[in-house]
Amino acid sequence: MKIFIDTANLKEIKEAADMGVLDGVTTNPSLVAKEGFKDFKTLLEKICEIVDGDISAEVISTDSLGIVKEAKELVKIHKNIVIKVPLIKEGLKAVKILSSEGIKTNMTLCFTPSQAVLAAKAGAYLVSPFVGRLDDVSTSGMDLIAQIVNIYNNYGYETQVLVASVRHPLHFVESALIGADVCTMPFKVIEQLVKHPLTDIGLSKFLEDWKKLNS
Ligand code: G3P
Image (cartoon, rainbow, N blue to C red):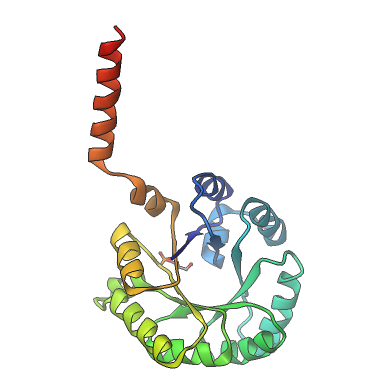
């Protein structure tokens, strides 16, 4: 399973990349706004310099022609840019056009298996089901991932399932068990994946014992 970071924070992207585990980056308008970085193009250029993998950049148009126009500008920035498009009717129309022209897309804000099937049929490269936001409204986000993976396997759809809105390490582990293609998460969750108290206790003990030997 590929690991993406879900942030527009360059420091976090650099740190995760330095850990040697990063395969790509997802951003969205809220994450970009949080960083207060007004020049989206420069931000994307900087991200592409740090990570050699899929970099999702979201459009803000909601009509198909507007989405296509924005997408064509964004893909000029770097070969790794993937256009993030909302999973609405106009978004599907745009993805159909973009995929026929070889432009990679990530259909976002997916909350049902039926939306995911439509994204695959339109030719999306990635689909982003939001697990945390479903959990927030008492619906299992991970059940949705299992359903989408199952349906995609049934019909051999090539669209990759990118688990988004990840809130904790169990979302990551369950995604891997189900067989999702990608899991994108905030830096905090990537840090949580590596942490274990027994690792820290064990390491302190090893270092203490070594010190005693040499004192
Ligand atoms: O980038 C989309 C998604 O991962 C957002 O997550 O935490 O705002 O639901 P969240």
